[in-house]
Length: 290
Image (cartoon, rainbow, N blue to C red):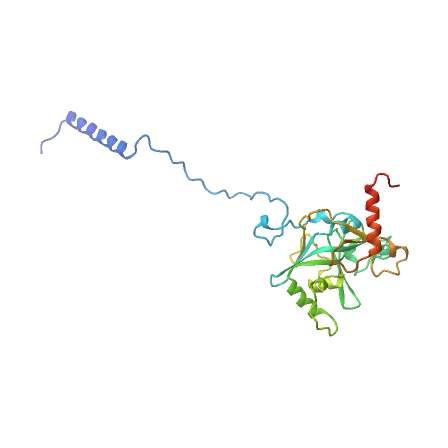
């Protein structure tokens, strides 16, 4: 084979380089769109959530806000009034949710209140929940067989008794629980308005017993409170004497029971108190009233 000279080799190398450059230009035209590099997913801390909602809801937009500790941190009377219209939720072990709108409450003001279990400032293992942080459940037994559910409020020994609910969801489960837990031989089917129209009735309907005592209503996994939907107008709240405290002297007559006027779900209506409340409201709206 004939040997090539240096000049010929140099010329051949330049031709090869030019051919490679032209081929690269054809494969990657200069006006091709630039594709940005693919970003890695962010693995940092999640963004802070908005208002606290029940941990059991998969879609926060579709469900009401779960009420937290701040809601319960108020004196007994304002809390008793604020509870009206809110929704109490009880999740049974199988996942069934029972819901009821609060329509009747009673306020117990602590050591000064002769009708309170904490009257005189006494503390016992039974009423310890009344002295715990606001929002703590105080569940006690009466007549050796029935339970009553209270929520502690601001102030040592003060709380609010839940007296009646309007059943909203899980009514058949409530009916079955009431029928199972009722004492005696009554076999008739309970009407809807009978399910939660009393403090012990609502405990039966929601399967609330002494094991719920001292639970935090703002954080518990089986029972909690949700903000009720707003109504078309401001609720008409009646202030009346509490029920079943005839031995409490002058405290038996103080208007510390609150309920929604006209609600068929309350335990008992006080017509005289309704008239007094209406008169006081009319007087407060009349600038000429003395």
